[in-house]
Structures are given as C-alpha cells and as structure tokens.
Length: 270
Image 1: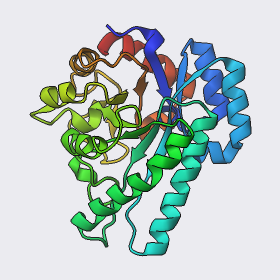
Image 2: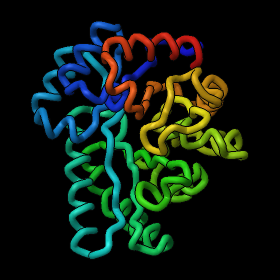
Image 3: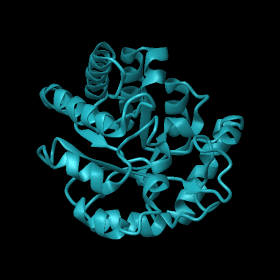
C-alpha cells in the first residue's frame, strides 16, 4: 500500500477548481503535494499561484505541461519553443520537481518529421531549463495519441531521447494509463532507473468511454497500479505519486467528494 503522504493531486482530476481552490482542497484533505496546470496558472497569475502554494506549505510535484513542439511552419515551431521557455520559468518559480513534456504531434506533418521537431525542440529547451534548475520530464503517451498529442509513445522512445542529456536534466514521466499495456514495461522501468522524474496513476476502463476523457479511478479498470508502483520504486523512484484522471463525469461532480474518493482509492489500489 502506498503511503498517503506521497499522494499528489494532479489538478486535472478536479479540473473545475482554480489553483487557489485546489490548494485549499489539498489542505482540507491532508494532501501534501499538487501538480499544477499551466492554463490554471494563466487564469490566476503566476505570482498568486506561488503565494498560494507557499502559504499552504504544499510541494509542487510538477507543472503541466510543456511540449507540443511539432507544427506546420517554422514560425509556429519557434513560437512553441518560446512557450516552453515560459513553462520553464513557471516551473522554476513554483519549485516544481519537473516540467512535464507532452511533446506533441501534428496531423499535417509526417511522423518522422514530427519526431525530429520534438528532438530539436527539446535540444533548444534544455539549456534554458538548465539555467533555471528545471528538470525536463518526457512523458510517453499511449500510441492512440500519436497523431496529435505525442509522437513519443513508448518508454523506450522517451529514454532514447532523454539519454542525450545528463540524467539530472532530462528524464521520463511514467503514467500507468499510457504504459500499462507495453509487454516490456517491467524491463523498461528498470532501464529508466535514475531518470524517473514522476509517476502518475489512474485506470483504464473497459470499454474505454472516451479516448481523452475516459480515465477511471484506480480500481475501476484493468491497470495493476500497485505492481507498477512497486516497479518504479525498485528502479529508485520514491517521490510523489500523482493521481491524474481526465474524466468528464468526475469534473461534473463535487471536487471535494472526488478528492475524498481519490484518497480512498489511492490507499486501496496504489
């Protein structure tokens, strides 16, 4: 059983809460860490977010998200890299463990070209992030997202890209929703030792009700989150465990009730 002290509320699990509301919710429920999304930072203002987190004594496990590098034109790609510089500034201000990178894809760009744009984008971001002591966490997504959200679709791919950089600068984010299916997952988690910057949990519902907004609470689907948690611990990761659930039904529910359920399922299934 995972220690509740390691639980981090990823803000998308209670998407209707502002940063201030999510921070207050964490305090009410005894959750010590939070993962903050950039559109929520934009709504509230970075200074207000920093103040809210610091006043509450919360730890920021990640800022979500950077990435989205591929684009049809050079000007768009340049703007995407500049946006990632801003993301790094936000992660630095919040003293986040990492900046989570959903690297992107583009339906109008050939797959191999998109992967090259991702590699170039990461190369452009790393020196900037290094100056601000921000760690870059590459998150491989399930292959069903390759066309528009991430051309990194396996842990192996993410590690290959990360290994071009120092292990303290670029690593991987392991999300059970995206990696549970991989027949090499145990081997690949072991290979990621020293580069695991984050671990996210949720569940894969059967049937999957929605590609993007169909994740379930742990215990409602087929993912063995506890087994995967033990594997990442064996690989040396002992940091926060984010519960990140994109689910419209949860978003339409009372966030306090959702967070109470998250804690219960975390203790029972993670």
